[in-house]
Length: 145
Image (cartoon, rainbow, N blue to C red; front, side, top):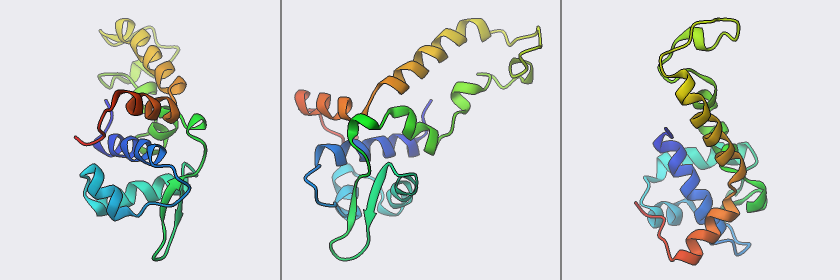
């Protein structure tokens, strides 16, 4: 459902929310702590910074931090930026007839899948980074794979 790129982005943002001390965290530390290749993670974080989810600062004391409060960042914000909305807007098996609202023909799984898609959309829109980071903090969970 979500690409690895998107999963890494979500994990990195949760990590930054958990570490939020007002200081920027360098890509090397984030990469090591999350066990994500640094060049790959760097591209993801730059994309998120470009879209104002994160802030980035260059230089020896630079790094990344949240660009907005964790309450103001939903899972859908991240998915929209990294993976796009195809999962929520396209046919599960790729039939063009499902995209045309005037077409009477739908894929064989359309009716069963539509409520699942809508429930997933709502979950992603309603779930914030603050909620996820708080849940991880309270459970003692780990962001590593």
